[in-house]
Image (cartoon, rainbow, N blue to C red):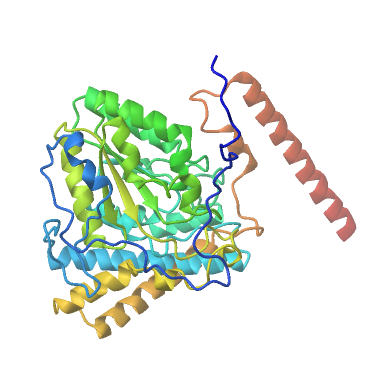
Length: 433
């Protein structure tokens, strides 16, 4: 073995990634390179992944910062579709604001807003077929609203009340609806990625036409499930779309902790031979176009696509988080890609198909709708005020036929409950007499 002279070598040290700005700093994104609209071209959907590696570092854009649409990715949507998209974004923002306040008022234990990221779920939901299976993370509530899931049912689940379709078994905001092809949200991050691939493989094995789409944050790409999903998807050419919502922050650690300093998150698909693209996540038209491209690619047996949505988390990670403790106060206000709602609004006003008066009227109508729905949900119960699921539901919905030992436990528990209730009533009657 060769003996090495180490006298002249520097001491080894670790690199600890640190964000550019901390509380008290002035945010300045002038060093961030943002490609102009049209620079990143639109290849054919049949292109081989090896021939489109440059797209993992580019940025698909349609809207400039004044709201004008141009370039090869412009999906040329009708005014009606764009107005529906605007309405969905406004509605989910109003929904988020009211549910956030409900949590602060103690009516529910937990909530997560998607402010600033609405385009990363609403635009894909509109570009996908209604029966394509989606495997969301925890900020894709916009998908349910696009697919017509009742807002009242969403609120009942948030309150875990007697009308909660999940019977209080899930953390608030972890929705599920098989009728809307919306897979159950899991608090265990990125488990949905291999599940989406498995579902997509099954769809292909059955020679169906439905594809799968799944979402995770940039921090979750460090999870093992992410890489397992990549392997299976590329080996079996699964018809699946992987969405990485790069909103710059995990709960309190910036994207560099997950490897964002070294390469784009889209580049993670390159080593697996997966078509990988980056899109301006605050440009609803660009997100729609990128999803439409990837969906058609998957549906025509050209394989999976990974999409990095370059966006910014405007609010805290959740109601349990205080972002002022780890990031500069005005970061979102200075984010160079702006706000998806304001950008789409500017585009429609520029086309003379929208105006401020109609915008104000729509906001009021949506706020009123959300408020009215909230009152209906609260009649079914809120946190700590009863009207929840009966205790015996804990034994249900696991086995097609309940095993004898669980049936025995349930019967014993019911008998004990009835006995306590009878004793309590008898004592009340005796005190009354």
